Length: 309
Image (tube, rainbow, N blue to C red; front, side):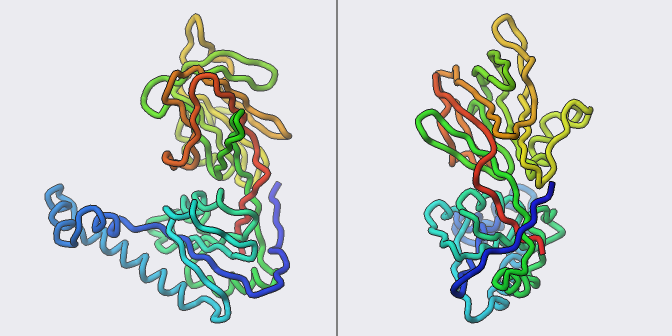
């Protein structure tokens, strides 16, 4: 069921925090030094810098439009995606993610109830599943948030908890497995049953992420009626075991399921090294999952509060 709420009351002028990520063009200049070197490097691979530069300019134009449209009396800050883990969000912040849908997911785990506005700077490039709005809509959206008129949709997040207290949040999905192409070995328990596995790892997806990586793991299995993935606003998770291998020591009876109502998927690592847990495709932000570590996965208390109108 869809959960819609309004933004909380605010006692002072809020701060708007614009979150963006470096463009491909910026990354090329950082890596290669100059525009000429970037152009030569791409040309040697039969690619053109013009397309990359055009996307960069579109992004910069959108960023400038958003800056100009911010209410003058509002406080403001900007942060790159790579610096999110070092940025301190305040309780009165309104977070504006300017870019692809994944930027909203990357930002969500660093928040504590702040409303998030997703802006799509290039609808021809990004689908706009979470980045729902055009940059030109930012003024009205911010004023609606400040006046408690914004409609905010709560999205379930997934949490992984290790037995030593470490935890990891994700908005779309968690991956649990080996960091290389080796088989992941672990014991799995869910719904009163348990077995040993050798597989390519697991994906645990939220409703927001159910149409992403989780769906691409096994299209037939996800759509053949065996498991109906949760909807974007569903307070449940879906897990899928990737390529489970049947053998005299490993089984394949626990390959998918829905997690909700306070239930937990439980795993124990049987990997000497290389076991990892990471979320939303960010491999550098991970938990270790080596031999003997115990892991629980379930619905997080935290929620993304996405401004839909």
